[in-house]
Amino acid sequence: MPQSAHDRAAELHNLAAHAHAAAAVAHGKGEYLTAHELSKQAHEHSTQAHQLTEEIGRHGAAGPPND
Image 1: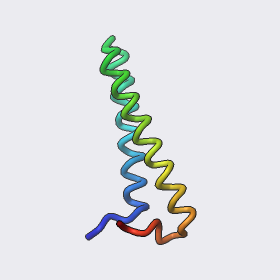
Image 2: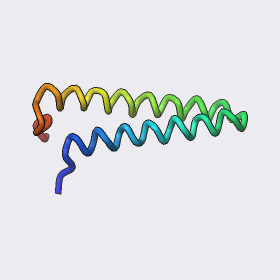
Image 3: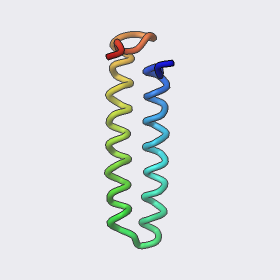
């Protein structure tokens, strides 16, 4: 069964939150390169979630058309 746009947006938000938390832990351990990579990943997930959320808003509750 295909994943709804709402579920995908929620998943991206969760992935971003997890990556932010992991980056904070890595930064606290002095693992700066890893923390930077995780922060970059979190930013990418947040951006994707934001874009998908905007698409859902433009297309209504059904979400964007599936490809």
